[in-house]
Image (cartoon, rainbow, N blue to C red; front, side, top):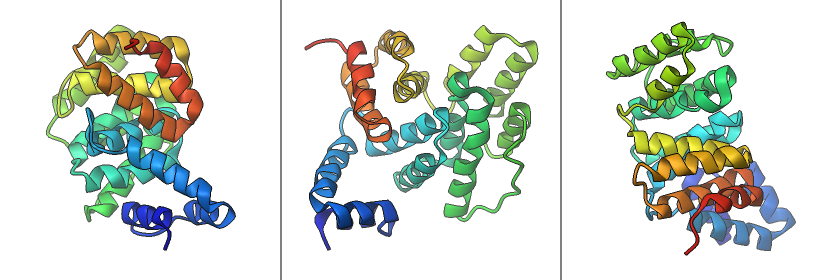
Length: 235
């Protein structure tokens, strides 16, 4: 088995069809992609677990369920809890609104199935309020979700943003990184710069922003690096 095929078998427990086809059509391409992914997803300023779970949230924020679910497995394998996952799935609502929250249910359901947790599922067309109430069953941070619900009821965008970014199981610093990543993966340059500045203001080291960019590159391609590189400070 080639190094690329072996690498992805270790990541996913099986060789995904898209990996096998890349190998079959151009083994060199798979080798180069494997090297890129391996470098981007190694421990550094951000841990592998943090990168995987950020990618879960970023893909929810850009409405790409397939990659979101792939990285849900990685996040759980890396030690992420269901409670942490819920917050990474809720925060992208700040970027992608109702659709991001609805798509997040696929990650949550996969995580519960993967960890052997039996749950009652709800419709993927549920309202944001219904989804947040549903998630409250599975976390001790009920007050965090309640604050979000109250801000939504008041239709107060400032309060909603503050509630979503508030530290609970996940720190406000990581939530700011997530929003920066969401905008990067959506190739929204102005918002990427804005949120990189907000993240930097929380004393998040520049290396974490750079590593966030590497993970964005994996899910949204080279253009994602163009976007976040504009926001990074020159060395």
